[in-house]
Image 1 (cartoon, one colour):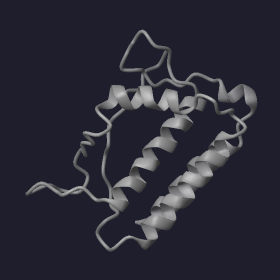
Image 2 (image 1 turned 90 degrees about the vertical axis):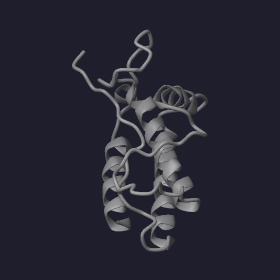
Image 3 (image 1 turned 90 degrees about the horizontal axis):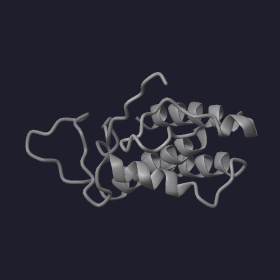
Image 4 (image 1 turned 180 degrees about the horizontal axis):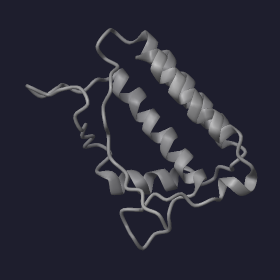
Length: 139
């Protein structure tokens, strides 16, 4: 699993590393939970990736107890974070004070630490799961 994680995060990192200043401001097609808010920009999406993968690090360090009968891939609830609306707000807040020029470094650091920690984790700790789902619609 750590090899897959490394390959996939590397692909995400490569895409963001190649963005121009203007491309960072491009709106995504991710519909916010609060429809009054604008769609995330690629910059805010990168912040979401940094947070989501940071949550993965937290789960590797302190795996939650699995409910009886739970299967890999089931929705994982993180009560300390709240639901998707709170996570979305946090993603937008996370990028405050950062510039697009800094974000590739933020992603690289977070992704590299996650891969190292996944490789060091005991067998069975790292596997597929879903934290939340995002809705994407054409504008």
